[in-house]
Length: 282
Length: 326
Image (cartoon, rainbow over all chains, first blue to last red; front, side, top):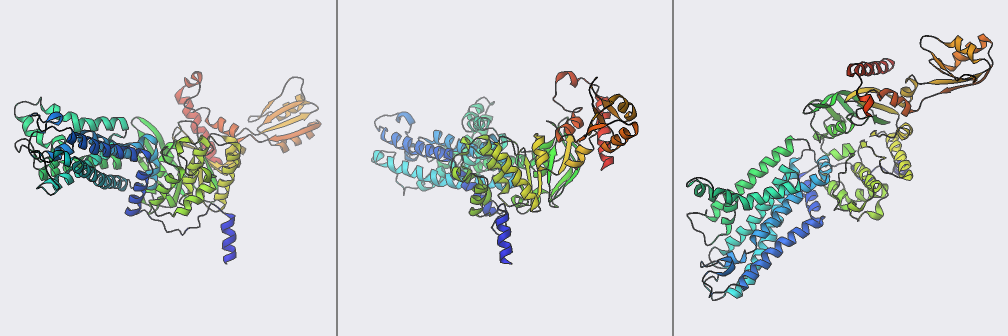
């Protein structure tokens, strides 16, 4: 018996020696997407850039802070407790980097044709989207939080004895630093969702910039108080509320409410992306 | 086994696949032929679930591809368009796909070896030649050790050695009892590799036959006769379905519509000496061209202006003729 099996195996090298008990599983799709993420240079470059923006800008703005300047210098940090805001001096650039990371992770599959291989392996499709969003959310949350903490601690010595000074144990600081990490994670998820919705890398990045940076400008032209009423709920305002320790409660949501609203936006985008992924031809 | 039933796919106003109905059997290589734009690639996308059919169904081993527990194990696919991220290595590409359904890492090494890519396994795919990309596509298709293999233009870009490799690979896979469906524009290659044929044009089924039967029944079988008195023999052979051509002053005649045997008997009855009597089977290419020349969508301008309805009538005739003789 065994001789025959051996002969057959030798005669047909195309046959796998492995046992034939394969099955697509959640863990499998997660591992697959994680290995895809780790095996692309662009992932590391974009993630590294985001970290560099947070740490570099954060520390530089702390070092450059001059207590004698009544305007608070370049970052306008005049309010007490702005040490976290100073540490997040690079937030604008970093959010673009993590958003682009999300876009590349998803839209990159369409622009290269990889999506055909991916959906052939996982034809039910949605696990791919959830896995991509989940993996990126976790990776960016961890990396983003670490970067913000490093920026905060790195700038701390420059701010000692100023009215801005805060320490890790100050009230609200741990929550704000975690909030910043969470904000970056949700921006990455929005990037994934936009990538799945628009499928083109350039188009998705344009949409990302619009949502994060241009939308607030539009509310200025709304009539009367409408702009003021709507504005706190826009992603570009609700998101940063998650780590804002100097907020004006009339115009900014509380960190918890901001997190809920921003997560809502991310889920909305993800839901639309899921609909498009499932219902339209790849 | 792949079963296509009343499959229809419309993109807006254009019908890419129009009521296809055929079965791809296991144990043989089946060639999937048709002119550009006939709907071959669309049909393959429908089979693998990348596009959803407007109506009808396509099943692989008895169930829709999407419904299988481990789709890569049921069917391996190579689509014509590139389906790899150029920034990843061949190994990383295969590894990512294998992880989805728990295919072990050693199988990745196996298929890389099988495709002759072991040495470049850790190079970025972006730097691969067309042929190496094609080999990676075949490796991807074999990753799950599937019972069904569907390849769109697998020979594209391969060097002569690669062409022989894929021919032996595919006939070997079929000999193991697997279902092999391949499309190609290279008729000579198809004639060497495939046994069964599915031919479509403008999204419709034109023929579901075998290579041998298709060429034999193409109506292009000729017999070359060299004889002492071509004029007499010609007169004796001519009939309603028989055509005889030959040059003035030449002893050589080309006869279509009669078997060599009947020509030999006629010559004997007329007392004509026959020096040579050679049946000529048309190539797959000739038979294919004869079937599809009327409906090639993108051929030269002059012919495109033909009367549409006449074209359709001829198409139906062809399809019926082939259907009848099955």
